[in-house]
Amino acid sequence: MRLELGYIQINDVKFGNKTEVVDHTLYVNKEELIAHLSDDDRLAKVEVELAKPGESIRIMPVKDVIEPRVKVEGPGGMFPGFVSNEEQVGSGRTHVLKGAAVVTAGEVVGFQEGIIDMTGPGADYTPFAHTNNVVILADPVEGLAKHQHEAALRIMGLKAATYLGEVGRNVEPDEVVDYEVAPLFENAAKYPDLPKVVYVYMLQSQGLLHDTYYYGIDVKEMVPTIMYPTEAMDGAIVSGNCVSACDKNTSFHHQNSPVIYDLLEKHGKEICFLGCIVTNENVTLADKNRSSNMVAKLVEFLGPDGAIISEEGFGNPDADLIMNCNKIESLGVKTVLLTDEYAGRDGASQSLADSSPKADAVVTAGNANEVIELPPMDRLIGNSAPADKIAGGFDGSLRADGSIEVEIQAITGATNELGFNKMTARGY
Image 1 (cartoon, helix red, strand yellow):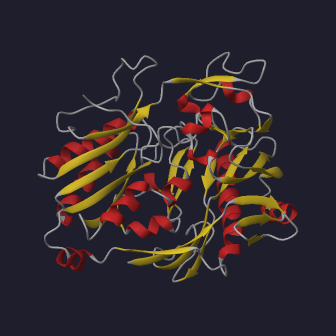
Image 2: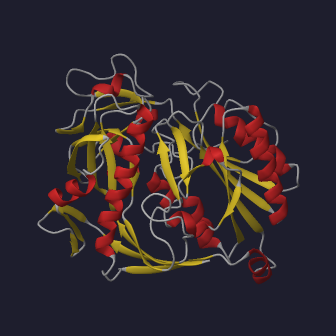
């Protein structure tokens, strides 16, 4: 499957009379966008704000982040199963507003939502301090159930990203890059002397606001399946999570997974990238056994020399990570694990809830329990009151001067387990 991505660089975002891209600036008609998003009777109010890199702005609580893209050629459309129909995506041509992002915020859905600071020490921990953000604030109607509130914000963000992405349809990209992985036998025959690698893509699916969607289907309801890597670039995977902000994969992360992009970059040069196995992280032992057994079966079927396995979340999903590792290693396939750590504020506690001698090649995205002080900002988009209750916060996190002391667990993307961050650890 072959996909062209046309990158349209966005260096600034402003409100304007027309939603369009002019000279690398994204102009947004605020009233038109609000009207476009206000037809959901689950939402009482929708507002739009802008936040740019370097501005003294704090956004919280953050629900999701999405990159505006538009399907220009080929089957399907963006975010299949939600905004477009369920047709297969990942081929043709897609234009990307690179440097722009939609951030959904407003009244808190669950306690595991996050913070984005556009400047200061917190900005070093989140990639979204460096994007030009169109922030959508939405409050639910009174009495709306939490899962309906989450669904309303999820759809709202996808609609906003699709609306903004559409302006890139007829813009000439600054760069066009081809990404391609051929069908299995053709692919393997094309690079017979290169080591074959498969990517096991673990997705959060514990339920109760811990959900991820694949072509509109909650992944806890599916068995592991094979995916072309380019499908993720067209929004086949969508976040529905209200889990710890530091290691939640937002929809933006799925669209821009460094694991996928880096493997494609090395494909045909250093490795033969066979594709992705999408799997879940369910709660019960029976579900974990079923999914890890099927992952191992698919790995055996594909016949790789090595597998990269990325986790999403921590605690309960650590068991899925290690079960996948053990069963794949038992096939004679070498694994590399991507995770983060909850090792306590002093770093002295056990990092993962499960472990194995076979997990001897691990990349860490950092310790989420490290504490940081976020200074007050000149402007707040959203509400800072949840600082004492969100994951990583505690009673007294929010101070009278507007500063916040929290674990980096509360910062969106701080220890992202796809490697979309700046943290790691070095062994000696």
